[in-house]
Length: 182
Image (cartoon, rainbow, N blue to C red):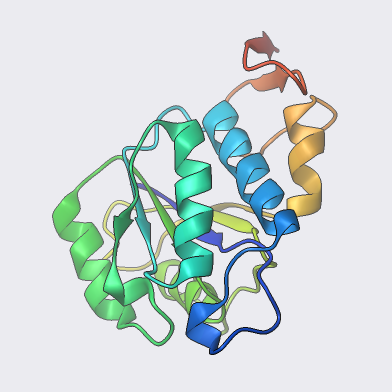
């Protein structure tokens, strides 16, 4: 199973409460670029699960448009959710590729748990960490990549390649067509 851990994109600094923070215009753009990157480099994402908080839900909805799936709200991805329970849900789901959209430090803790690490992995806003595992309920998974959002455009425009890709793909900035490069 390939698990794509994606932190929500840039959100408002202030709102009535932390739980009500929404994406900024920059966050909308980050989420769209993240979705394009994943669509261009991952063969097929079967499901997208998201935290119910607006900033994560908006990120998931924007990114999922590029993936052709409808996000499902997963309460365990909310801040402070039960990561062990989430791992068992992923185990029972048995999909090939699953994207999870949530928050730090929880996603970093989940990545560490899947990889059998002691300390959490740091993800920037709209950052992505991809792991592969035969069973999310039992660590140890294999880290495929942790990407900084500043790399996304370079990957999409062919100046850099995503480490999980079998072949280098070049996707033009205004085109959705793919050109494989060996």
